[in-house]
Image (cartoon, rainbow, N blue to C red; front, side, top):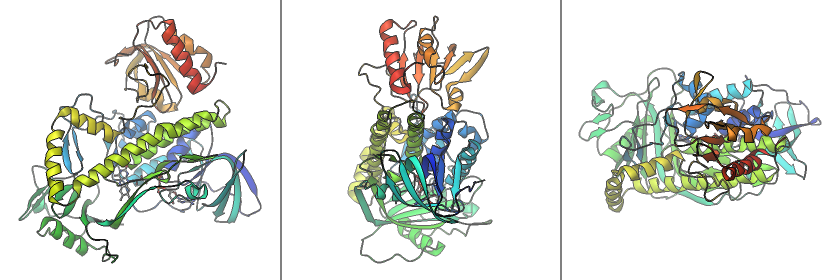
Length: 531
Ligand SMILES: Cc1cc2nc3c(=O)[nH]c(=O)nc-3n(C[C@H](O)[C@H](O)[C@H](O)COP(=O)(O)OP(=O)(O)OC[C@H]3O[C@@H](n4cnc5c(N)ncnc54)[C@H](O)[C@@H]3O)c2cc1C
């Protein structure tokens, strides 16, 4: 799968346009995005094979629609059906009923991180990215023209020159540290979380919910954190793989190490959290099986996303609690925001100013995740005050308007990018709705038109004035004229960036000169001057 074409001795110096340090999900997704935009990156991954450890159990939020834009949703689900919003989820161990929510923004894709990484690695390789496994970034320096990376490869140390380097090297990012980018935030050391694959005897499954029917306690619903006064328990009966049982407890930070993780330790923890025994069994089938102990946690946000020619994406830029599963929603959307901008700068079609919008658009999204994961952590903590807060919060969540607010926050669709005009169309700065367009006798979804990651100008007006306005940029912008079938969300024409965000929109049957002027401005701002 991976190609190792690295120099095998330390004296060879070669160069590339973009070097990505880290071949986790975000490094691989960025490699796909750059390759789609015509820039072939080199990915350095220090591990020789993909890690066995599975972190994420699923993707939560707008990222599911982003993957649909790239055809990756179909790859991961094996179905061409578009993603549908979920009728409910959970926030801070409180049920979030979304069944009565209009225009529900919350999508979930229940695939484990290892499968997401495998699909991304396959796609990046197909698109021509070069993935060097067993190659570790060990140092870097930069000047006005580029970055020199020091790398430890299987054949020894070597240097590689790149015009830009992206640190996708996780929460302990060396790229971030070498650039002197601060990572302020908080570290907690008073929580202990235990997770393991388990087998649950049939007699302990609640037939109504599929959750656990715990003798002497009652029902623990599936796929949601369940809080007691003593801690948290979660039961995830994922189809096709062993069920995951997780507990979280709060304790003093007395400096003593918790006993090593084992199924017995998990049993004791369940007893402390629920007050009764849960007679679960070891997991069936071939391993490796999950047996994880995590103590404490970090909530930190890089104070800059860019230092000269080095940029950060994913966990290298932000770490936070995994509650609610926001990590890949945030990180993968960072890469989709950065990919087309960096490619345009590398290809000489945009100035470096375009790169500044990466941080100004994506850092607020990370701030929202920091906020809602901390809010959820407060809602699951032990104590009677928290119990009282939960009663009140639970009452508020029953209002569909509040439920929608929380769903949009978890989806990451609450952040609106600045499209440069205070009186812009309500869709400008938002992720584009998945319109269905009738073209050449067939129907195509906007998400399908977005597969090539090119800017889209969609014109549903009679005189195609918006399409004409973009015609000088046909080399960069994919222009589609047709009729919108189904809901048009009130738009007659729209300009969509490669990351799926609306840069300009009109609701007029015939946009006037003023509106066409704002379209011209948007085209130049995002995609350069007409040729
Ligand atoms: C227990 C747990 C559960 C989670 N659950 C969810 C969930 O349900 N949903 C969700 O969306 N998110 C979840 N997350 C978060 C998600 O796993 C992370 O956000 C995601 O892995 C970040 O991807 P990344 O590519 O930025 O970093 P990483 O996944 O950390 O990848 C970084 C890569 O860089 C490599 N690397 C590091 N240093 C170097 C170097 N110097 N040179 C070369 N390579 C290097 C590493 O080997 C690694 O492969 C969870 C996290 C944890 C810990």
